[in-house]
Image 1 (cartoon, rainbow, N blue to C red):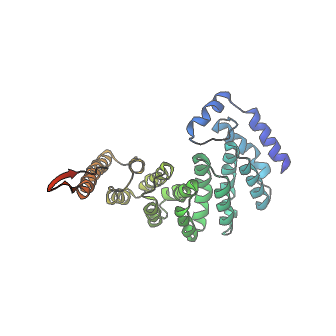
Image 2 (image 1 turned 120 degrees about the vertical axis):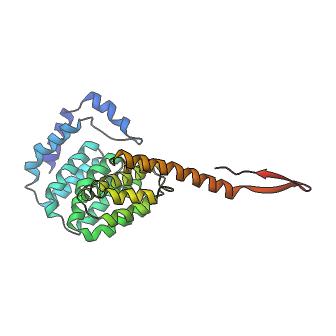
Image 3 (image 1 turned 90 degrees about the horizontal axis):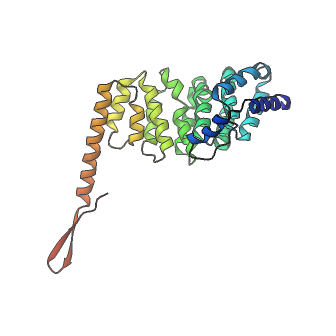
Length: 269
C-alpha cells in the first residue's frame, strides 16, 4: 500500500497546475487543502493506478481509501470517490458503518461530500435499499455535510426512478433548514427526481411553496419547462407576500400610552 500511495502522491505533485491551485479555493467558503491538480488529471491518475488497486482485497482497498481521506487533500478524496463505485458489487450491509464513519470524520466540504455520496453511497443504497432508514437519520445530524449527504446520496438513484416517497420524506425533514448547503442539496435532489417524476416534484413544490427557501426552490424547478417554472415562481412570490401580510396583521397591536389615548404599534419582520 505504501508504494502505491507514495507513487500516487508523487504523480499528483507532478501534475500541479499553478492557476488551478490559485483558483481552487474560490469555490469554498471554508479552508480547503488542495494540490491544485485539474479534475481531468485527477481522474486520469485514478484510472492509471486502478489496475494495481483492483487486485487488492476489499479490506486493503478500504484501508488505502481511508489513508487518502485522512490526508484531507481534496484530490485524494476524489480518487477515493473514483475507485469505490468500481467495487460496488463487493459492498456489504455492514459497510454502512464504515461509510458513515468516513462521512463524519473526513468529509468537510461540498465537493468531497458530493463526489463521495453520488456514486459510492448511491450505489450502496440501490444494493441495500432497506438501509434508506439509516440515511434518513442523517437529516437530524448536527454535521452540515452529513445532513447534505442525506439528500445528495440519492441523486443517481433518483434519476433512475428509485426512492420517490423516501426522497419526499427526506426533503420534508430538511425543508426549513437554514444552511444554504443543505438547501442546495435537497433542491438538487428534487431537480434530479423531476427527470422521472416531474408532476410529482412540481406538486411537492406547490404544496410547500410558502415554506421552501428560495435557494431550494430554484434548484428544484431548474429542469422544468418554462411555464411550470414561471408558475412555481409566481405562486412562490404570491404565497410569500400573503404569508408576510398575515404575520404582520397578527402582530399589529394597540397599546395604551397616556390616559385614554392609544398608539398603533406595528411589528414588521
